[in-house]
Image (cartoon, rainbow, N blue to C red; front, side, top):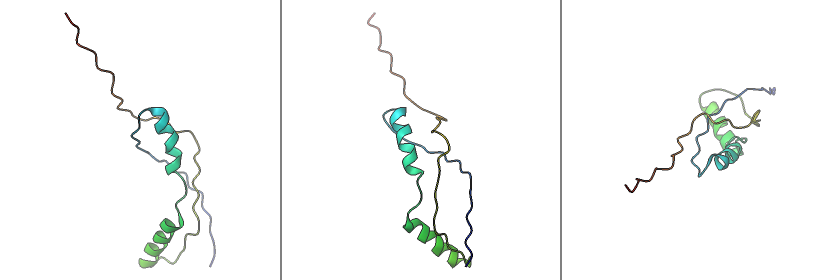
Amino acid sequence: MNEYVYEVKLRAVVRVRAVDEEVARKVVPTVLGSPGTLEIGLANENNAAVGQVATVTDVDFVQDNDAQLLKSNVALPQARPSAA
């Protein structure tokens, strides 16, 4: 069989719940890694089941930039009622 290598630009939106943004930002790259052999194997089985005779042998993801915050719902500290 022939082997083909493709480069594909990806955009991922990763939702993280954390105590603060710094911690959240640090964990983003951990979910952007390559799929393991199990995930690749399942994809190959699914492709074969629908008649697509091709086998994915490897996948690498590269993060081109730092995680950029798109949205946040950080709760602001509540003001204490004044003792008037």
